[in-house]
Amino acid sequence: MRGVKKQNLPNKICVVCQKPFAWRKKWEKVWDEVKYCSDKCRMNK
Image 1 (cartoon, helix red, strand yellow):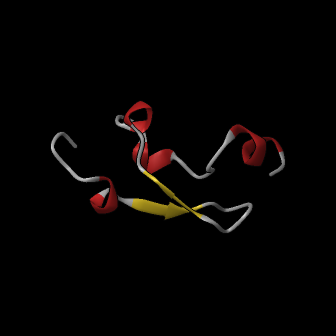
Image 2 (cartoon, rainbow, N blue to C red):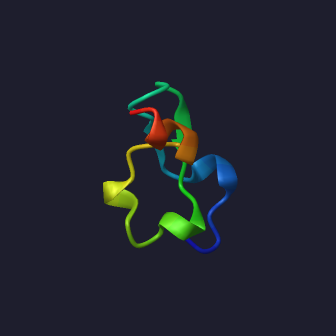
């Protein structure tokens, strides 16, 4: 994802709050498994 502008990053919809969230560097290796936008949503599943 190097050299990609922020508006061009991949997005997903959180399964709890239904809000879109963008790719983050810390999710680089597990992006296919990410379902929640934050720890708060993950805890409230």
